[in-house]
Image (cartoon, rainbow, N blue to C red):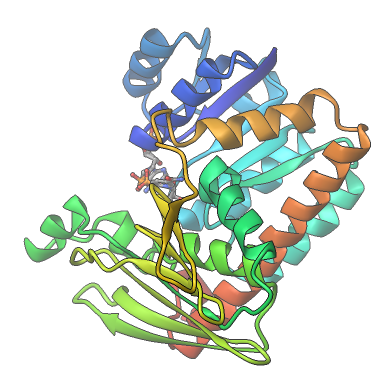
Length: 334
Ligand SMILES: NC(=O)c1ccc[n+]([C@@H]2O[C@H](COP(=O)([O-])OP(=O)(O)OC[C@H]3O[C@@H](n4cnc5c(N)ncnc54)[C@H](OP(=O)(O)O)[C@@H]3O)[C@@H](O)[C@H]2O)c1
């Protein structure tokens, strides 16, 4: 069993803990929260025996090998540094880090701690349906780009409309649409097509100063991939990957609930499976496989691939953000 601790006690951590438990590979042992009553409540509900309100104590005396970090984006870097220095494996929520400088420091730190494994929790690329899309793509001799959409109204946008600034819509916490739902189609694109040559982001700003929605264009040698994402409205537009006369249609580039191959005659073949499990279960299983047997050649290859993807996504994300002239508070000179 992989003993793990958690940072952040919102619904996403609950979902990850349930996925981890459903995989039968993990045991929750330590809960960190800024508030003792929150840590106690989470622990009583989910079984962690140790609770902490000080991060130093959590990493120094917590009985765990792996930490799942689901704090606001702007805190990921400093918490990951503490974790790696303490020799803990890190599963960090997307987007892992704010910029390339942070990512480079993490890569350096990982070299100094070769026993530590680091995973960015990009759940979509671990799912069976993503793998089915990847397999279908290898059978298509011509690929001419894609249009990928993931746009869902966030209940926290209600708070923005009421004059508040929740973390996910705050420049202070490295929030905004690109940093949130934008990460999923970006992961889809880079995993399927590799690194683009050029990239531009056209954000639409909201009153808190972050992007509420926007369009990113990734330019590859012979085609473009357009990403549409946002948190201030709902889109029901399907996503598509274009062949010559054939197409893959995806209901939603973030959830990947249903994918269909449409051949040159228009005949439709469902290539996805119904999604019934916790959406974080495939990644929890993948990470456990590597943590349980890191020296296995296949596991090592998967690990290297995911790490490389995380570095590439971080790079494009940062450059897209720069092209959209989005600067977080902790990056400003004053
Ligand atoms: N993979 C997915 O499907 C998915 C879905 C949603 C979110 N996420 C990612 O998960 C991460 C957390 O997102 P979220 O929406 O849950 O964030 P959030 O609600 O703003 O904060 C998450 C947790 O961090 C702690 N926290 C909140 N404000 C803080 C502050 N000012 N200083 C220090 N700690 C603070 C809180 O835990 P305590 O009160 O216990 O300290 C809170 O439960 C983000 O990186 C997000 O992108 C991923």
